Image (cartoon, rainbow, N blue to C red; front, side, top):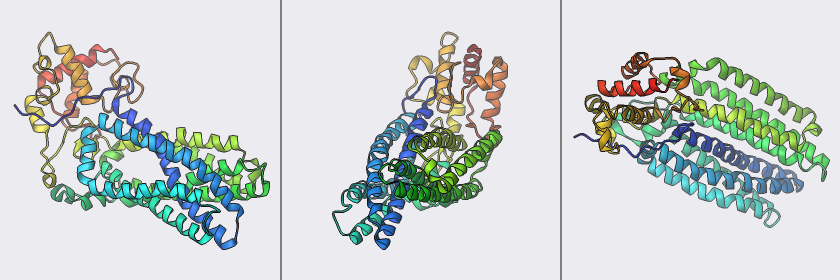
Length: 445
């Protein structure tokens, strides 16, 4: 019997397994992107303090650094570990693909990251304890290490969207996987967002200093307004370039919700532009409550929809456009000695070839049909969809409401034939189609 290299199913009711990783990842991105943006900002402030003999800027840097230590590095480290845990549970073959393609890239990134973690302590601790020129050099190496982690990780994340070149599938080369056509626009897009976040967080810190030194507080709030405005402009500019480098399936997903996404981005762009301009023109009006509220808004209304969009646009793939989101290998990758699994699944059935399916469900009978259909739904659909009537993220109830068994089966046939290029083209034997359709119809969405 043919067996495919699947792992045990991780299923999270109501939300779908992949979205647990998404929630963790969104919080991690807020923290990690702020830390890289702050590293670049520290280098700028240290240069200004050294050249203009502005010792007052060091007190701001120290307060900012302590905030970053707690906010970015503690929360970022915890959620970073959380991403590894949730991603390994929800998408083990996706993580395996990334590790097998980029093991030395990741090892190099960890060297930069270790220096970055040590560097943030050193940058903060050695203010006023070493000469200014040495401290300036320290801040620049800290910034370089931070940007280095970004540059290495972006190549890996971009590969999750697609390698960008057919050569990768033949060569299996890490460089062909890393240097896709969307790697650099993706990197500069995130650099812009990091600069913007450093300014947004910077306003939280500067506004908290108003009682101690109002003039310095206003000056720094104004500067952070300029920094944020610059970062926002860079983000929007490279977003346009980035969208032009995405594969066809990404645009198919994007087009489904394009109007609401564009509307959301326009509203956010106007809101934050007004906020940045207010900080520049009337810095006194930016208080700690308002500045902190804008951080929450960027997390909930900016980052979360943005990460949902990026995760959605990868569909039906989770990595390299050869591993489906439901962990099935969809094509041959000769350069990695990987064989596609769709033919054997179409011939023998998903229940037959998955090693973790219980023996009593491998052959569909009248008695186990409902249970087999339920398991098929979880194996094939739950990484993207929540299956329950009360499902929260991309629930099937929104797609199947009011449909009977034959209507649902017709949709499954169309998906299997590749009629929806953002859904896995997974062909099943007739008895598995029938069991899956009957189970979904029984839910009475």
